[in-house]
Image (tube, rainbow, N blue to C red; front, side, top):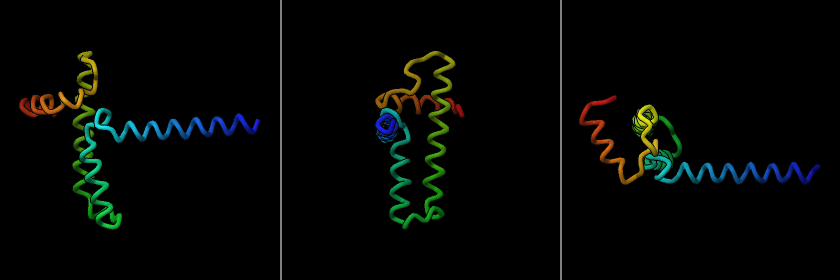
Length: 101
């Protein structure tokens, strides 16, 4: 029984590591640059969150924008729902050109 619980714990740890690796990869996180800038700001300001509010706001705006893109592509059944990193700049410009919010 003990061995089974230990195995479940190890699987959970591996899953958590994989999830974090995906979040920190540009293919899965279109806001990786903003994410890293906010972490850098925290590090530079001794983790005083008030000093980095502009970075956090920018990151949230980025997330909302790409969530809107994914939702729109799902409705139109355009796959992949999250565009590849190479296509993102063109898609971003297209949405901004038509002032879609």
